[in-house]
Length: 393
Image (cartoon, rainbow, N blue to C red; front, side, top):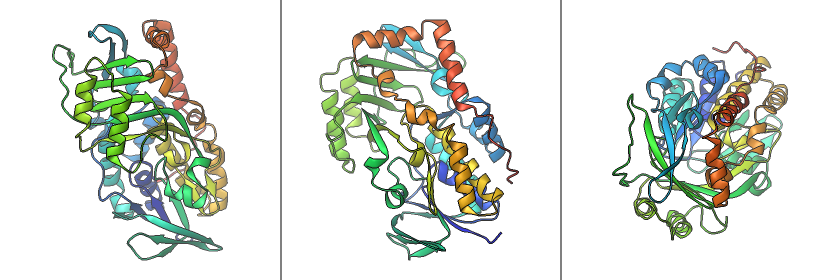
């Protein structure tokens, strides 16, 4: 196989996973990341089912992930007077293994740093496909030619926009938004740590809104329905104002949570979206993770990102670098596992649209049979017995 030069856009989860597999199996890999450095912290992400755990083991990172995992966190759903209405068990929220996104990104970077050239603080600005490669222009570094360009750059993927078309053609908003932010919010009088180290977060719902405080899933999590045009995605102050407006009449500890979010340096807000794609390749371009199969807060994104990276790298190795053969196989193999990303919507589950729907959601976790069925379904969706053994190093 002639060594292929591959450019990966994005250094969060899917990008470093691709770099690790491809760099160790004969490819010349460059990873470009818009951020100046790895992003620490963030909300927790999780893995569930034997397929996810097997992938972590094959990558050689399972022990590192376990060493950095968060404690299991139960969600206690309360009313405005702190009376518990339902408990969402940590096993449902956090799967088999849960870790902060920033910690996972750090582990993946350490395990792939020797397999690829990492370029932080730069981004792709233009691409032109030719018969023998892709000419890529960057914001800061000199233009360069690559054999393939792989987009692992999230739901707002630049690679997808430049190679496939405008974002609105492929990304569908659910009508809900979410925000995460750090900051001290008092939970005085509430139990936050259980014997054995298990933690407790507290959620407060009103129709179309959720505030979740405490635990390790996120410093503070807000989920709410809102107009997609109500803020500027590139202006943090506009986003803070949008959040404050959505929860302006909030009771419980909502005002304190908004105060903390108004100054938090790690504030982040975006729409709950899902992609509308059944094929993830075009010409010399391919999408991996949220760039191709996002479903925000759906509970499967991180596992799908690692699965997609493994399958794409495996098919490229199996095809001897022939991207046409490999990309066709990648599209075919990922069609089934990504189906969950094309159909789910976490918004109405996290922030039901009425008081009656909130009560119905809560009852699902007080009925043991219903809860066990939901837990079984999540693991079934995450496990794919058809993923081949590629023999990757």
